Length: 181
Image (tube, rainbow, N blue to C red; front, side):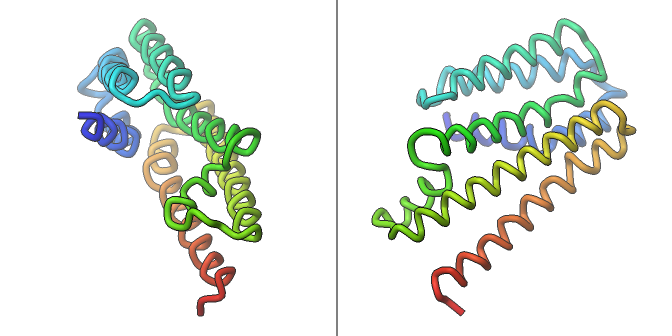
């Protein structure tokens, strides 16, 4: 069930800009808020409690409640900003305490990381923080001033393409750092 809820939130996040762009003629903003709120509530009730997860769920539910109560079409554009903020907070907080996110992921494959790999994973986590900051600022600018078509294009396609490019470039650099051709 937890996996299904996680997939639902992932699909909602990926499809959200297109759903807003094409669905605004058929659905009211409060209906988007109700659907997102139900997904976030289900996640909060079923997911293991990790540091920050409850705070994210509460913030997302507050956003959904505000969207539902205001029924504002303009407020629909702020969900990608919220998600970028969550990701920045998650990656940034990991730099301040505990293991950086990328180091945690690397240790799943190699629990005994050498010191140079630990430094590298910290740097990659910092790069992802910069990415989420830039992504959030662009999403904010488009929510405030951009036409709906630009907002949809950026948040539904360009942001994911940039994320994929960052993954690919980092993978290539990692191969070089590891000494592989």
